[in-house]
Image (cartoon, rainbow over all chains, first blue to last red):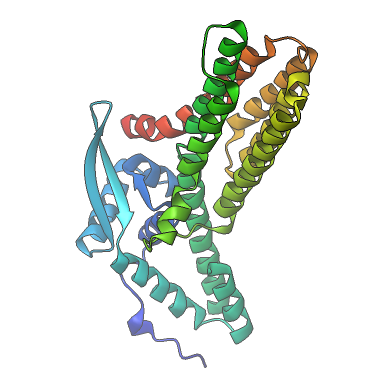
Length: 109
Length: 200
């Protein structure tokens, strides 16, 4: 039996698309809407819904700017979002045997 | 069963972070800055030899190599001043280190060639082009950008042309053209990719 706590799983990150968005932004620092949509292989509408949900939860921040007179929406991970991702990975690691979990932590560094 | 799912989820997160890192690295303005700066160095040297420019090549190259280095090392400076430097995944880090190693090698080679007078023999430009080809060859795989393979092929074709012209002063404008087309050009395309995707 592991010490995995089902109640502690982050419901917001439990969606595959939202998890992909947060992980992508963790690597990218900031990315525009199209890059997030392409990286998560989803549609405009679907990406918008998930981005809004993450924004409402305070996991990502959104800002708008103009590039060559065209509006561009940029997203970045907040400290709260980064912490949530780390906690989520830590929860997943509690499901693994100790050696695997240690290897996973090394890989995430 | 649950263990396998957890492993898959962790691998999924790691891949997504890698993609984000590759996206950030590929969108960096460094290639554009270096391509323009080095092209100015070549064209300024050509202008000095032709008598069109009073700026000596030594001073010009000090600026054309020094300023891009300051720009590229801004992340290091950010870390030294205590500001947060975002961590990238291993793949993006490898890509950044590849360009860093190529930059150090080419800068030291060019300085050594200029100090010893070997730069006049012209072979240095072909070596620069060859190393650029290697960097783009590895970069196209690491950044998963298939179209960059045409850039490394072009660099290696350019290397042969530069070697053939090594004893002629026209090697300088040709080197400048290669820097603009094959370094600043891809840099601009990668940077503007964000704007193009946003419009799509």
